[in-house]
Structures are given as structure tokens and as C-alpha cells.
Amino acid sequence: MSTTLNENIMSIITDYQISFGIRKVHNKDFKLISSISPTLDSMFFEFRNVIDCDDLLEVINLRIANPPQSQDFLYTTQGLQMMKIGYSVTKMYHDVEEYEANPNMSANYTLPTADFKEIVKAWRNFLNNEK
Image 1 (tube, helix red, strand yellow):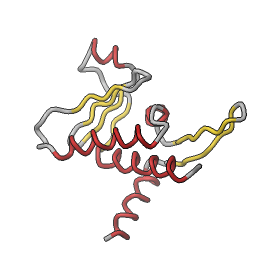
Image 2: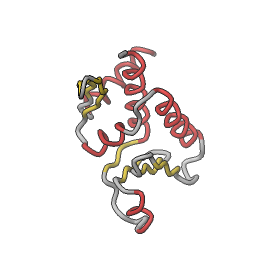
Image 3: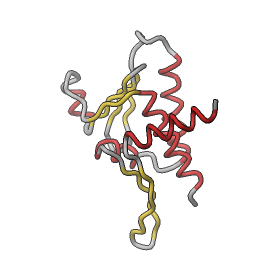
Image 4: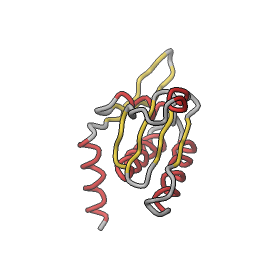
């Protein structure tokens, strides 16, 4: 079973062209994620430590644990980006104020919530393992 799980994670990493790296800026190491979407990349910039990732995973798990027809969770970052975490789809918006002014606007990026959860877990593991 864990082989299938690892294959699933690797497939998601490959599908979204996820790579992790460290860049030195002013003599300080910054951990970065790169993917097929600048929106996805910028969202992860908001989750710089394991605790923040754990908080996000908790929200995702709470949403998945509830019935599909229950309300989506709105998650605003410190940088005022926003995610609308649904049972099956997560939508990302660059500007929470713009979304609040027009909740029917198109998301800047959308992906399956199950995939998003696996990407968050991989990012969390990278943050935790790379000192």
C-alpha cells in the first residue's frame, strides 16, 4: 500500500512539475517551491514553516472529512491571498479584497483538493527535513 501511496505522491509532484530548492539571499537561506503555476508558488511562500503547513493541513482534512455538499472553507493568508478549499477542488485567489468584492470571479488557479493536500505534505516534509 505504501508503494502505491508513494507512486501517487510522485505522480502529483511530476504532474505539477514541483521542485524544491534553497536560494541564498543576503547570507540567509530561503526555501522555495517551483511548479507549473506562479499562483501555487506564491501561495506556498506564505507557508514558510512546519507549523503553518500543519495548520493548513488541518483545514484541508476538516474540509475533506465533511460531506461534499457542506460549505467550502475560506483561508486567508497573511499576504492577503485566499484559498477556497472545497471537498474536491481548491481555488486560489491573489487578492482577498478583490474576491470579497466579487465572489463570482474566476480563481487565479484551481486544482483538486486531494492533489493540493499531497503538495502541502511534500512541502512540509521538505521544510522539516532540510535544515
